[in-house]
Image 1 (cartoon, rainbow, N blue to C red):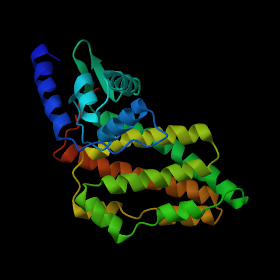
Image 2 (image 1 turned 120 degrees about the vertical axis):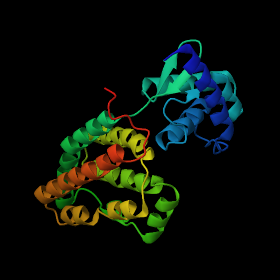
Image 3 (image 1 turned 90 degrees about the vertical axis):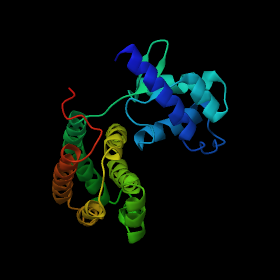
Image 4 (image 1 turned 60 degrees about the vertical axis):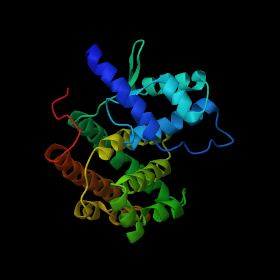
Amino acid sequence: MSRSRVSGAISAGDATAGRLDAPPPRRGDQSISDWVHDVVRRDILEGRLRPEEVLVEGVLAERFGVSRGPAREALQRLHRSELVRAIPRLGYIVTSVSVRDYDEIFQTRIALEPLAAELATRRIAEGLVDTTTLIEVSRHDERLLDESIRDGGASLARANHEFHLEVARLSGNRRLERIIDGLHDDLQRVLAALTYSPAILRSMWNHDSDLVAAMTAGDPAAAREVMYQELIQAHALMRDLAIGGDLTLDPGRP
């Protein structure tokens, strides 16, 4: 990136910080740096901070009404998780996402999430876990669809993350749960860049009932296959959106 482009991005980043909503209140159990990190991380994942926008330590501190120390620590953590990259002496830039990123995320999900569904179903069949939360988070009503139409799919993405994370939790494999949670965070950045029509959102809505039925019936093989097929279909549907739509994704970036 040239120096002039970075300078222009700094200006855009300052404007972005000014137009973002005021941060939500800090929870009593949060440190200041955790609060700044968690809010900015969510802004990136949900697309309020777009790829190539610049985050400047001083501007970030001003937005949250804190000193530069917690803002610096939050940016360093975001850098370690590869949500931003550092530009020496200037700031941090929100990293871009590409179709390759999207494909890699789904390749990994397709490898791991059917396993999570199978393991969870075995535990359900053995009476080791309660399925109450799984059933609750699988129920998507018209209000969720309406909200997703208004917010560009963010509500549906959050509900999808919650459901798949519950499947991973029921698997009893904590490492698998952590990996799947991280994959959905990565995926959310890609999904935030897509433009969804109401028809597309409806086609993506409430696809969890078959999986829940297989899991609660205690059929591990069926649960694994249903999860696999759902992920294959979701990959193809959203990849078409990523390549064919008016998006910020870069199909050619390595």
